[in-house]
Image 1 (tube, rainbow, N blue to C red):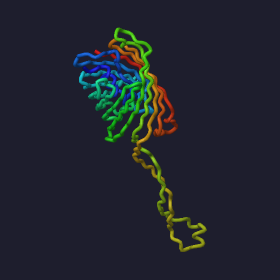
Image 2 (tube, helix red, strand yellow):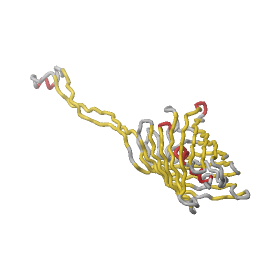
Image 3 (cartoon, one colour):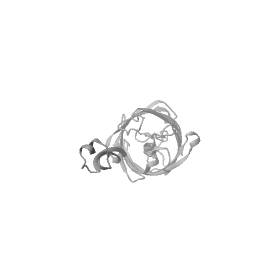
Image 4 (cartoon, helix red, strand yellow):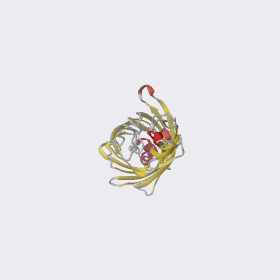
Length: 308
């Protein structure tokens, strides 16, 4: 009998690329014999990020989600992306993610998931995922005193460029109180630390200086040179320094960001309500003019979901 809790938690990897592990979770749902489950949720993010990165034009976003889950571990997830930045609000697109969740032991301490996501987001969208075409995701996890998760993402953008992102996550569920006959409802916090690394593809602009010969025609007739050397040609050659702007693609595998979060989750039967503050420190980020993109930043998510 497949425990629905495990399925719902691991399907959070479909949101992790978009929202730094903002996960739907229905910890109050117990093992059951139903073949198919559905999970519907709505999540608000004050700043959509990816692997600890945020775009200069990042906007708050609303994420309606819907997931179909099989007791055997197969799932299909859909996410809509709505820009809620005042008068410029509007739908930006959606993503579709099929996947599979598995475990290696009966206690489900060792497990993992694999999935693939296709993005349908407009090119002119201000959200950071607008350049994505598709991603392939996988994760392995161990749950003991702490939960340790190692995940990887292979991303392909709309120009067929690709990147690899890895994430190490350490988290611990701390129940503040439990209610219900089975003690499956209640309030918990989950201190979480994420370390991101991977390649970073971007276009770097650089400049080159070169000496180019230039002909200077008809030098001044009454210059001192023509007075001293009457036979000098009416044309002389000088070297001129020419500066050219060029661009090249840069790709490195390096540390990307360190992020800490404190999800607060309240579970009531099939309902779950959550609030998560994040503090993220990016590293080795591309610098833009007059901006400090390596500074720490804060954002939060809030949402609710229902499993039925």
